[in-house]
Image (cartoon, rainbow, N blue to C red):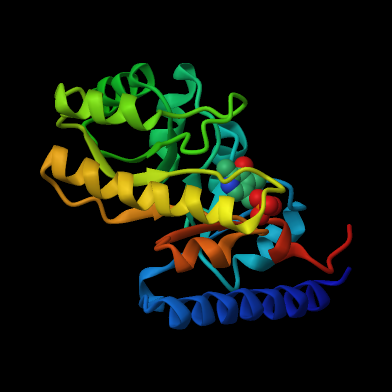
Length: 233
Ligand SMILES: *Cc1c(COP(=O)(O)O)cnc(C)c1O
């Protein structure tokens, strides 16, 4: 596809997603300004990513190396890490990502704190929670996160916890997805109270369920496939 066609299609898809976010905000009395779309580029052709960069500036990748490589080429974009992070990639990610959505264990939290401290930066992170309790999903359980918080295990100077992230079960009925998202919101409020600090961010919702997520208070929605609809390599 020619760049002009790719641009036109991306513009159309972005506008449609934006409209849907606005409508979901109106239905639920949330401010649309409080919702940030993270354009998930993990499966997108490089050519599409370059075109998208002319229209938008918050991108998400799930692999640290691809995030670093792509940031090298598009340094003006705000890159979010949304996928699993191995301990040996922490430095790479701290050098390249504006926000890590996927801190899923105390060991990883501690490693990030150590590396950020060495680098003299303050890491910006979200704690990933497994609200649905599916065994295949990583992340803190509600009990584990609240226990760790009351034991002071998240109190690290070099890490700023901005909020929580979760994934709803794929192909679940709407009421079940909604329960996961509202569960994350409730957990965030409890955690904020335990930690005695504000937690502004809730990262939840993907192509299939971002409207439900916005209705339930998402501030970051991670949308990939929907954004690249109608494009072909
Ligand atoms: C891939 C991915 C997304 C985007 O998924 P789509 O269904 O393509 O919108 C969102 N969040 C995470 C963690 C992902 O890995």
